[in-house]
Length: 153
Image (cartoon, rainbow, N blue to C red; front, side, top):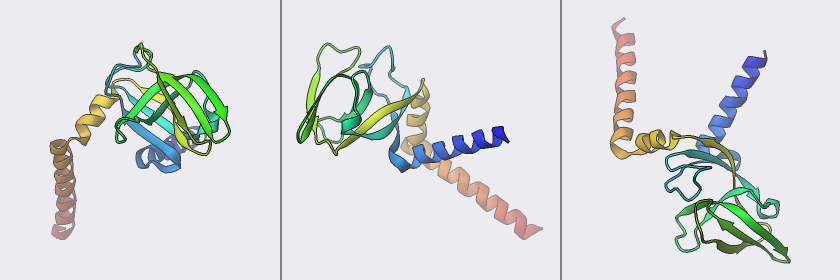
């Protein structure tokens, strides 16, 4: 019974991460700014938290203020709470410079939950256009084969 419950919990977590449900998100690390804790090519799972829950030492993912479509994952170095805002200082473990930014107390960002070493390479490969197309075609071929086998029986 315990193994089934654990399996069900892992399955629910996997679905939540893959669909983004419950604020879970799977990301591929594309730079070495967090080395050696997080390496280029790792995959990370982050979960959305309220800004008021940030603590020094947390590894958080936030939108780059210079490129809104880019996410940055760095360690929190300082947090100051004031009326109407949470001021945060972050820095990549391998970086010399810090980022200073603010967000509203009701705002949110991602906090690192899990690191999957080197899994990002496989995820990036599976997400590439040619591989994705091949997987869709393979799935279609398998479905067609199963349908034809039923018809021929």
